[in-house]
Length: 224
Image 1: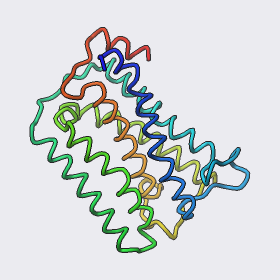
Image 2: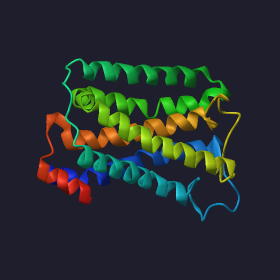
Image 3: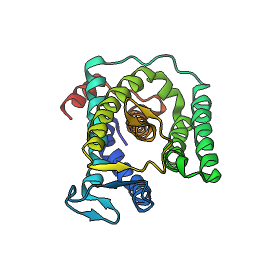
Image 4: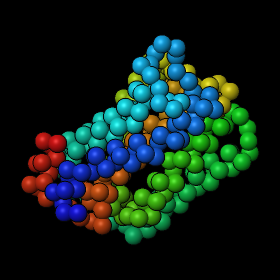
């Protein structure tokens, strides 16, 4: 895939992967009543999940991806030093988080079900990304931090408003009861991990194997 095509297709590819990977997982959550939606609050469902939720599977990567593109264009970040140990370190971190999720899942406590399902769903992919090319992700760590943090904060607020408005409800039975700024811990982690997946996935498509986006292509990022 040439560099121009990477710029054009990075977000659509991530959208397709996000939709495909999230659909069965989220259907399972609703089927198990980990979360549910308010009566007369959705236009319809496919399987167990509201149509609007399927739209979100695509809209979140577009939102975060376009924010990343604008950041790359306007800030033009210079990659920091590539570190050969970064791949193993990042992979080990997310593999450890996955292991925690597997332990909680096998432990079988109802209160940790949602947390466990998140930890065995997203971190394995993040671990694979770091194992594949953690050097690039480490070199762009400032970009990862900024372009993950701001969309995540925005989605935390949006989710808190939706829960408060009873558009959807998170089961108190299947959550640990901790919160982040009034948002259930599990929901906060969900948006953090999913935005990491989007940002890191796009960065690897653009810069993986230390490929650079040229100034001309960076200009095209701003028009995307």
